Image (cartoon, rainbow, N blue to C red; front, side, top):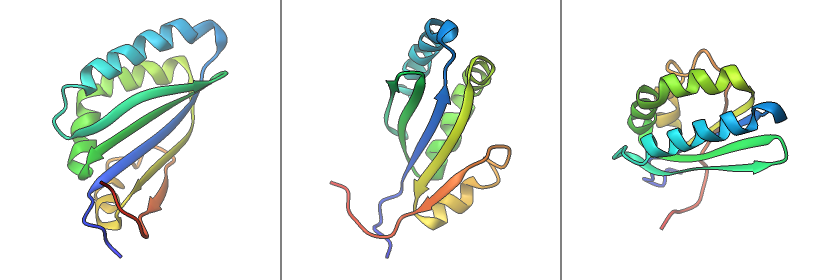
Length: 120
């Protein structure tokens, strides 16, 4: 079943060493600032549990994800030098996920295909 909802949500999880926490959180502020100006970004923010940092992010289709990666590529490189990306999930409709597989080929991604539901 397709919902017609082209939202792609991305769920990266980072392990942040305690001594790098301040530097990582400053980078997070830069990510949020840049992402807030992306017209295809639906939502964006960070949550944290102890030393695990999670980015909650959603985009209008694969085009939104690709535009985001172009916008924050240098910041992504910086954060990955400071901490470990230990899990990366991408959720969405299968046709949109297929468009992202070549773009995300250098990452270990677990893809989740939309099955049923709705979005208001």
